[in-house]
Image (cartoon, rainbow, N blue to C red; front, side, top):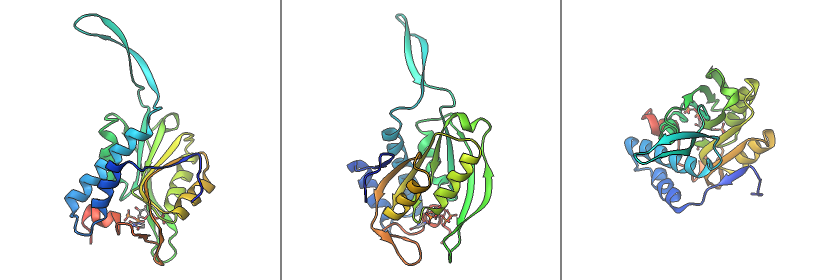
Amino acid sequence: MKNYPNVTIFSHPLIQHKVAILRDENTKMKEFRELIEEITTLMVYEAFKDVPTKRVTVKTPLEVTEQTMVADNAVTIVPILRAGLGMVNGVHTLFPTARVGHIGLYRDEETLEPHEYYCKLPEGIEDSVVVLLDPMLATGGSAIGAIDLLKKRGCKNICLMNIIGVPEGVEAVHKAHPDVKVYVSTLDRQLNEHGYILPGLGDAGDRLFGTK
Ligand code: PRP
Ligand code: URA
């Protein structure tokens, strides 16, 4: 795949190690959920080096000092339902007071087109960095649909975080929304004829919530 300025593919061995366990068909629901959270935290730590900050005054036992902290309401978390829910705690580990909006989209199994069924976003979301979460970036249709909704609400600073993507999905998102920063922990080979990522990890929602 070409290099795009707003697209980051992680190659950190600690992330790759966890993704390898995540993919394994023998990894059970509890461990799968924990790994999704841990990988998300590692990705956010890497991606948010330029998070908005504020200066604060702190009184240590010895003196008063000016220090840096993360700005209030710096980020808003938006998982794409269902599977994006599994990544929320991983962001909250680093941004514990971040507010959460929800976008419900499901992919039609035949056409692979996304269908919206829910959208509830916090007031003032347009003034924060939106961290849009979905473990899987396949055709890119769901991510593009979610970004369309966020932009309609006035969001200008959106970053999409996916655990596994494929080149066609990354390219589709980049083409539709070149201003959106895309972070993918691992880029896989291709989609199969049913729109599943190869080698992938199967259906992320089913593995997170035990529905199959
Ligand atoms: C999965 C996944 C993404 C989408 C990716 O969700 O979590 O949202 O497919 O595919 P795309 O890039 O081709 O749009 P799904 O629609 O299966 O819903 P679920 O999370 O409720 O299982
Ligand atoms: N959604 C998933 O959960 N897995 C895939 O491989 C593709 C889309």
